[in-house]
Image 1 (cartoon, rainbow, N blue to C red):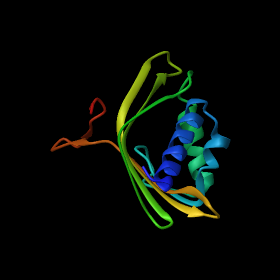
Image 2 (image 1 turned 90 degrees about the horizontal axis):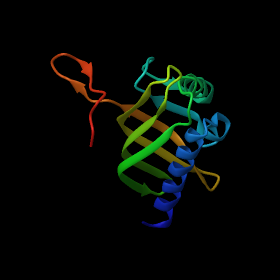
Image 3 (image 1 turned 30 degrees about the vertical axis):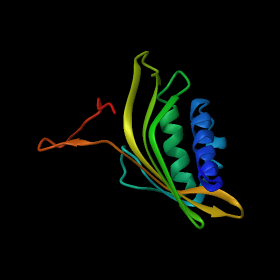
Length: 142
C-alpha cells in the first residue's frame, strides 16, 4: 500500500470509529461540502453536508448501542488528487427495539485531496436486488 492508499485507509478507519461512537460532528469532518451521497434509504440522493448530516442523525437514532463496523475486500485506487475505495461493509449492533441487527452492503467511496487532506466527495451504499421480484436482499453474506 502506498502512502496515498494508506491515507485513504486511515480516513475509512476514522469513519468507522466515528460511526461506532455515533459522533456525527467527527464524521462530518470527513466529507466535502459538496458531498453527494447515495444511500439504501430514500431519497435517491443526499446533497451537501446538511442533508448528509440529517441522514446520519436519523440512522444513529435507530441504535441503542454503538455501531460496529466490519469491512471486507477493500480495494483502494489513487490517481493524483482522486481516490476510489470499494468494499463490502457490515454495520451491526442493538436497535432501540432491543433487536440485534446488521447487514452487509456494497460501498463505493470517492475522495479528493483538498488543501493537503482527503475528503469524501461521493459515497454510494447499495444492496443487491432479487430479480424478478425487485426486493432488496438484506441477508447476503460475502
